[in-house]
View 1: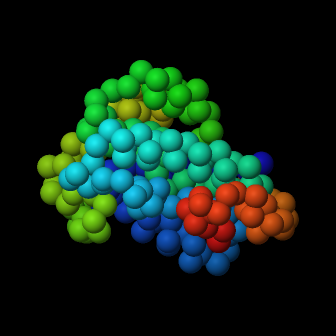
View 2 (view 1 turned 90 degrees about the horizontal axis):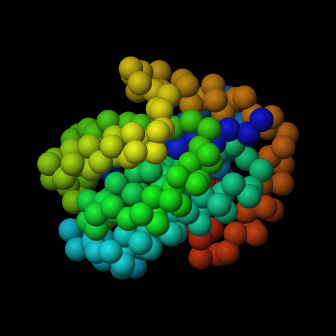
Length: 200
């Protein structure tokens, strides 16, 4: 049975660091991961973010998740609709139509891992502001989104090493023989979005 994991949290919480560590694990099946779509946004991001750019990020996140789900591999989403919507809420406020869309698609995620803000991971990459207060505010909205959409995180009380072990064990529930055509399947995703997917 395929597993779909969403690793979420504010910027600077170690999501990509965790996924990169999983990629280095030798004893695991091939899996597909998504990249953070905000890094591909050609509109205003960071401190200049606006409703147009946030809407693009939400819509692109939705598309890339659908594209990834069409490929026969276990999935790890580096961010998902839940935490992308936290940024939308910060810049633009709540949106009923977006919330309906998220509520409808929340079933995509077999499990959600929510990482906590870590100031040590804050890096000025030109995408997200790096002040700690902003990081904490996004974290509080992410947590509120979990409540808003009635999502339970699987990692409550876990250390980062325990979270890593959980992710590896979850991936290993998958029959890796089914992934043989993944490189072919990924070609069905339009080239514009293919760069946001990694087969590892």
